[in-house]
Image (cartoon, rainbow, N blue to C red; front, top):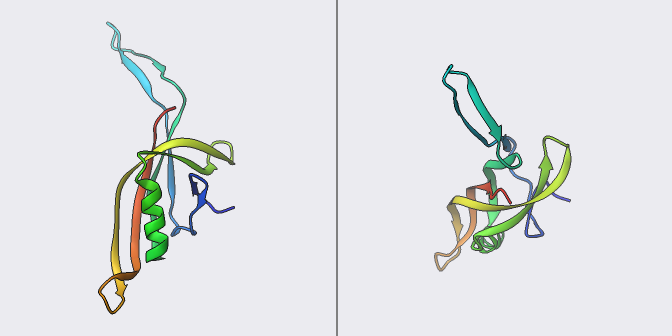
Length: 123
């Protein structure tokens, strides 16, 4: 299995430097003595910041973008907390890529620096 799958589609290996972030959501404030009081809200949440692919064919990039057209997707990736694969509901942030090679009609055949991030929905 690949490093990451979206709705079951296994992505090609991303560039090194993938950074999953684990965030603990806290409802907090300060009491009359100035001490922090708070509690955890829900479970830890994840963000996969800047997945980057140095080169993707136009077909690969199109397939990824078509999957990400759905607002919510299911993403399977290695959980840094348990060191096991997990699948959670996420949504995609901005997506960008630079067309690199084109065919004789001016249609891209390859893209470089393909990037996007994935954010946990908390569900």
